Length: 86
Length: 142
Image (cartoon, rainbow over all chains, first blue to last red; front, side, top):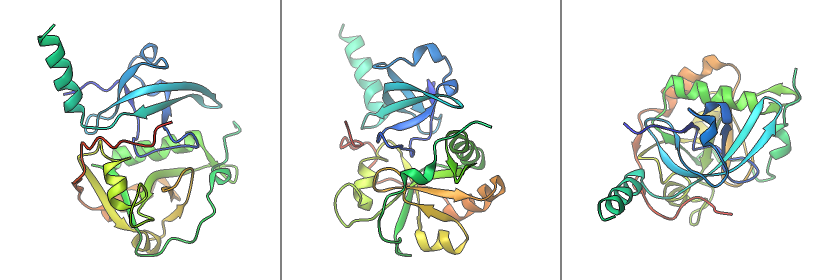
């Protein structure tokens, strides 16, 4: 099973064109820093995303995520390959 | 009560959806997931001053390009192995309003109460394979 860093509905968008969710849906909010690669979505639909920004909201902090294309398995395979050849 | 951003301010001006328009959502969905997503939307947005229970979907508005069915499946939803497909007419006939919100072809499906999640899930039916899963076209990038 893949651990999801931040739960989000990857169907969402707002006026920025990015997926959004709330910071308190992260398993460790300290991980959620602009520019960081994270796993977003849920256990059934994890995807690799870049944290774009964090914005204050009346009910918390909004996190914008730039979801990267492709299957997460491709990213895992890349990580295994470069680790094995290091 | 906090002053939430108004969803109505995000509406696009465009023709009323044809009943045959295909509406797409990355899945698989469940009652728990749809409830969580609708509640998250209500935490973030209001409609006419009232927190709004909403579910994000995409509409296949064009025959080609990023707002076509293939464009959505291979673009915004390419990270989903499976998707739910339904027509706008079926949703509207069942009493679900669809608002054209944010960028094209995003829509917000409105729920009157959280109890509508179960009938919505029934209508969405079983998820089916996304033929464009894993494609590298990607979502719109800034």
